[in-house]
Image 1: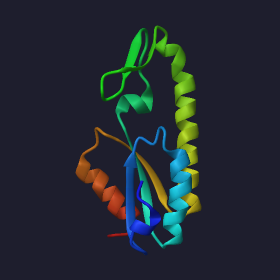
Image 2: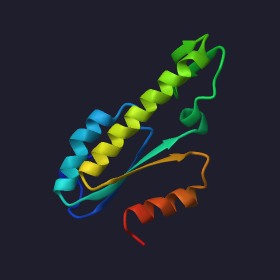
Image 3: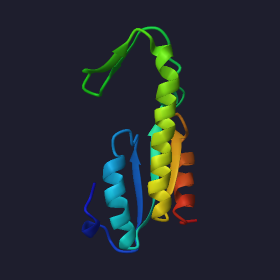
Image 4: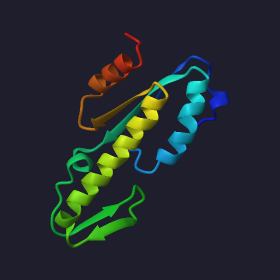
Length: 127
């Protein structure tokens, strides 16, 4: 994440991520950006499967390099806990954004990118 000193004062920022592991950094950096008058939007981009966790039976999750991150023979049993943790993470992200006057959006990667861009422009007050 860029240092607040490297972002122009009173500018607009759009941070895109799954934000699965970024909440601590965000809670440190976003307030520093806001102190410089930067307004912004945290845009969480997830797949439909990450949003709904439709898995059952044996499942193996891999990272972008192909190494196994997690596997289970009981994926359906993990669904409720996963969705609860996703909800808690999203509440934390919403809290970070709101405390600084920013907005938080979650979108599915399956959405038309033009629609997502329109949402971001609207949230950043650029229309």
